[in-house]
Structure formats: structure tokens, C-alpha cells
Image (cartoon, rainbow over all chains, first blue to last red; front, side, top):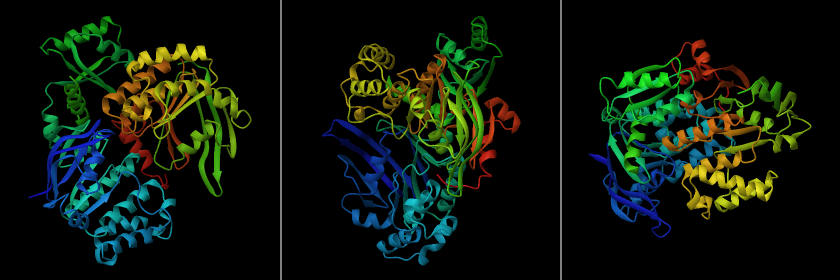
Length: 308
Length: 248
């Protein structure tokens, strides 16, 4: 059974001038870890706010755990945990006071649900008398997650929990999410980091309020329409420039150590023709090999298609 | 890139009481170099950057920025650098034109210079149709590209970029790096922090801060060789996982 259902959700701002969410439909199954992947301004936060009953949509319908977001908003608020993108705990209450406050608001106690947050809470417990405003970024994030979990929600909404967090802490955070999923909690999480997409069971790629694709990360990668190659040379910026100036190459994007390219009309001789061209344009130490597309490659491809 | 040194530090240190935020960091950055300044949250990056920009006085150590002393010539330093961060860049309630004129004026350019340079800038970014729009109403990608162009508008010796591409879409992120390369080709030194490890690869050299100390400094290729790893992500993980500080 689906725990989160969106049907043709539309949200506009400024009297219809800006369409933040443009006819979005998707479902999240019970116990699923579902990722909403897209840059700032894609509409991710508006979707979270509609699902957590904090914002009314202009069109379409949505339900959480079987309850309608408009008519049954009171029930939904009891059953979901929400961690907004902006730190929203009480800065002048201590770690312990914040947690106690949220437990009390939901008519429960820390003791009653301690097993659910234990793994995460022990990491911030040494600082339980510190005011939340004085915590570091990583610790604020952990406290916010504890507060969102303390009433044992059925569905957890996490809006960009890893933004601005370094690689090591990001990895730790995703480990925590996996453990929560094992406890049967449905999780909808958003992120602008494409590399985190592969840690979700299913993802929706979103840009300018529109869903570009919904599938498992593996399927999205499989659907990449062309062969993708990684190429490098001694001077990477020159190489990029030369690759953009040939009819042989269709798409060309910098991807760290390599550039990723696909051919316009790939034939058996495409690779040789390209290598010849690059030699005549004085590129040295060229390395060309086929590579597996990443979710970011797919996102770029889908974005370009939508622009056209 | 040339051999001219534009940032030179020697045992640069900043203490807050008992806490040593930045601990004896020593490094040089060359003119036109793209220098990646990486580190985990709480490693001391922001503190170091504030000192290098002349905004915070060091506790000990030496440094010159664009040839100016970090203790005595902070005003000259500020005139010779550009700065942009994800959090603050432009005034949202001013138009595109107003922002350009404001920052041009702050950096002491004449009206004539501002006029000429802004024409080029607007053309480069394709902003002709948006000049009278409030910056707050522009898409994030455009905002960040404009912010960068404004930060190098006065042709500073060095531009400091603090996570300039956070949250930006993957296509714009790459266009942003095109602008960085262009600035570097013009001889502007780029000092940049990022959480995207693929962007670390675009830097000429990378430094890694861990617990206030500069743990590594080399080209991406040499660092990968040194740590025997296939990607910068792994290098970062190797270096940062031993970190004791978990601050921000």
C-alpha cells in the first residue's frame, strides 16, 4: 500500500506568476526510502510543505498514510515527522529540553520511544545541557532528526538533511536513514547531491517544478539513451573547448577527472575519428574509455531534453 | 598560472580562548592558480578564509595577500580581492543593474568603467532582458553566475569563493566552472571551497584541512597517488575520517 500519494499537484506563487510545482504525481510505498532529487528552486520544499499540511496546493490531491492532506490535516500532523531544510528547533532551549518539548507536544515521553532514537541520540547526549543554537551543524542535524522521530511517526519527511554537510557526515547520515528504514518507517528525503540518489530505493528527478523521471536509480541509469565515454588529456580545459567545437560530439560535460561525452551518430569509426581530430588540435596524453552513466549524467540529459 | 606568489602564509594561527581554530598553516598560492580549500565541517576553513580576507586578525604567524600584510594592511587587502559565498552575494531587492553599479562603486571604479564593463558582463551572461529585474526574482543559477561576475568585476588579484555552487543544478554548476576558468586565464587567482568532490578535480592544487591543521596539499593527481585511491572522494574520506572535531 502506498503511504504517500500525490496526484497532479500544482502550486503557484505570486498570483500564478511562478509555478513552483507543475502537475506532479508520484507515490511512495509503505516502508520505502524515496528520494526527491533536484537543485534549489526545483519545487522540493513546496512538495514537502503540501504533504506535511503546512501549505495548500492550487490543484490536484495528495494523501499521507491514507489521509487527505486538506480534510484530515489534524490526523496527518500526528503521524508524520518533518525535518525542514532550515534549522527549526528552539535555539535557546537545550538539547534535552528541545527533545522533551517535542515529545510532550505529541503526548508522549522520551523514555517511551527511546529505542527509536537511541543510536542517534547517544552521539549528542554528551551535550544535552547545551543550547541548541550553540551546537555545530552536524549535531543540530542529529538533534533535529531525533525531534522529528520522538513521536514514532509512520512517515518521515526530510528536506535536504545533508545540504552543506561534509562527505563524512553525509555518509553517516545515510547510514542512520538505512537503520530507520529497517524499523519500517516510510522515508521521503530530498537532496541536491546527485551522488546520494543511489542510496535511495526509488528516486524522482525534479527540475523547475516538473518530474523528469521516476524509477530505481539502477533503471534510470539503464535508460540513458546512448553510449557514454570518459575522456581526459593533459590540458582538460582545452580538451573541453575542442570537444565542444566538433560535430562528432553530441554532449560533453566536465565530470571531475574526466569529461563525459556521447557521439552525435555513433559508428564503429567514431572513436578513431575523434582521436584523430583531437591529435590535430594538439591534445596530448589522450585517454578515452567507455563508462557507466551516473544519475547526474541522466539528470543533465533529461534537463536538456526538457529545455528543447 | 605564473610563479608570482599572491597568497603567502607562514604558521598562520587563530585561537579563540583555549580553542585553536586554525593551527600554524603554511602555504603559497600562485597568480592565476585555482586553489581548492577543502576540509570537513569544523576543520577551520571559514576562520582561515576570514583572516585571508582581512576580516579577522590572526593570533600569530605571518601572511601577505596580494603583497599586503595581513595585520597592518587589511584595507588594501579588501580592495584587491573579490568575495562570494552561497549565503551572501548580491542584494536581492536591488535590480541587476543596481547591484552591478553598487559593487562597482564600492570597489572604486568610475562611472565610465562601470558602464563599459557592465555591458561586457551582461552580454557574456546573456542577461540583456533581465537588467531591470530584482535579483531576488532570478533563478538561483543566474544569481550565482552574476554574483561571481560581480565579485571579479574590479579585476581583483584574488577571488575567494565559499561554496559557490551549493544547491545549483548540474548544468549551471558546470557553466559556473567555465567562468572560473576564464577568470583564471585572465590571471585572477581563485581560492575556492566546495563539498562537491568532482569540483576538487578542477583545481590546480588542493589543500585539505583537518582539525585546524593543513593535512595535505598537492595536485589532485598526486593526492590520489599518495593515498592510493581512485577518486578525490576517497582521499577526502581517508583524511577526514580521523577528525576529532565535529563542529561547523
